[in-house]
Image 1 (cartoon, rainbow, N blue to C red):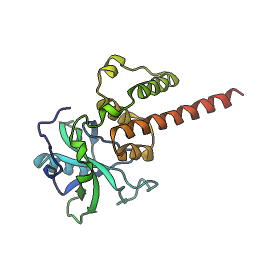
Image 2 (cartoon, rainbow, N blue to C red; image 1 turned 90 degrees about the horizontal axis):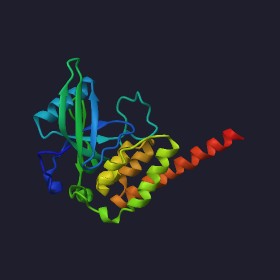
Image 3 (cartoon, rainbow, N blue to C red; image 1 turned 90 degrees about the vertical axis):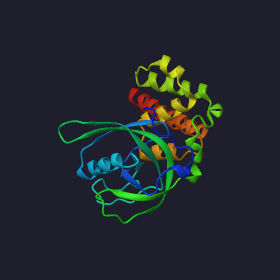
Length: 223
């Protein structure tokens, strides 16, 4: 979803930012993430973001943290997104869409009085995220599409191939990464990939391992 606000340099991005810890989350630059917000602390976070710069940092808790941990430690890297769609449901929830802007490294978590957490983000090492299409020409699109086709066939899934063929390399890699059914560690590896080519290669490798495991389980069940 397009944003009305352009961020041309890391200096354009705010410090501090609210953060939303969510296991298995993956937001990437210019990717779109729908959120169903119902916890009071995050309803407050959305209210405050809408009254301010509309930016929220999506980040995962540290892996293997118990789900009911009240204040789980955070991984080092997340992605800040801008609220580009907002709807009230009438039953106390917000339906929100975030559009990814730029990854960040957590400089420090701040002591705050808000019910939601905030951190001081460091954006500079991810400044290329602010350039749409950076590194697109290095992506092995054919390998990506072959792997996608194999995955769809193995799982008996359909896809809009006309839309896929018309998508840019950046949109394709990031959308497939965000939609991928893999776990928190794999999602974090995709987030932390240094460039678009590396992200595509990680996605292909993880998908091929998943396919090999699925085929192995099928072969074993037939014996």
